[in-house]
Length: 465
Image (cartoon, rainbow, N blue to C red; front, side, top):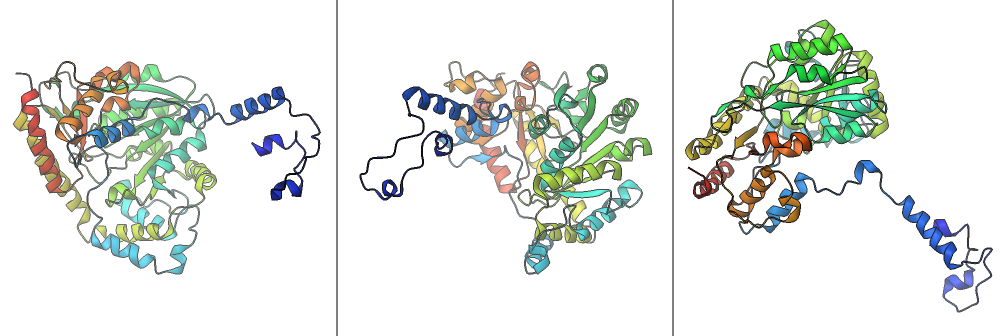
């Protein structure tokens, strides 16, 4: 307020500021009511938030947290958010602790990331790429995969450029694309037609390629694909990736391939950039140490791709946050250097498959179908057979949302189990596609999974026969 009024009112004297009662000097302009009202109005306009953050509709995380706080079943078993319920392995934690004792690891890293981590990534991914990526020009370290994707959008998207996104999508894609003024073009994935009555592979969630081709226009600048997919658990087949890549090569569309679950796959997994030299030239691959090493709070991610693209991602990253957390980069470098000899990647897959089997046994027991994940650590269960009692007291902001939000609220209130309604990851027009589904994160300790299963048995009385 004072900054707006100072041009109108003379600065108060030192006597006034000490608290003595002294008649103030005459203002240069009389502070009449209409002048002050105009100043306040100006101030109000200037304090108005940007449209990109001004939405007042509650997001899914707020609603789930509110439901959890209001539930009589405490403590809640959180199967909603995809954070791990256990620590990274000892060799990773020890690397982080030792890094904190080194002077250089507590100072700024180079903006493209610590050289040791970039070299470690180059060697770790060489078996998958068929060559070592140049750690100086083809890899850049970011503050988590999310900031890496924001850097990619900031690097290439101008106002009005179109970005194709498949539904369901990771919700951060949307705000990240809108920040630089991009226009999102949505193409829905479709669940299996019998998904409400039969347990089927996540591979049965499909893209209509005619819909995808119609989505491409001369303004299409980028396409975002996530494999293994959150929340569906689908690993896109090589044939599917080839059809997507062919369209992008033909139209010179940059592919942003979100592969943060790239160490958790239970079926053959093809990396988009490895399809051909032509596809590699237009592909940026996103990775995440948080997902790889059970450390989502570390916020260490990276982008890999051709130098011609990476240089601009690195430039955007420099302007967004300059550099990322130094000691944790060093720990991740050591993690990649030692992971193979520790048998870590194989153990990751085995452990997560065991958790999947342990948790999904409850759906088999209840006779509720689900999608069998091909990768990642999420399970999509179909609760079409669950009948919510008529007149159940939902708060207005839940009552107006699709059925999956009501199911999520109902599970939290009645059973004390939190899950995520996937319609949050669809546009309003396509939300009906997943209105009977809920997403469960199984990256939790076994005792938590067992607790969740015991509570979910309470659904039996609500399942229609």
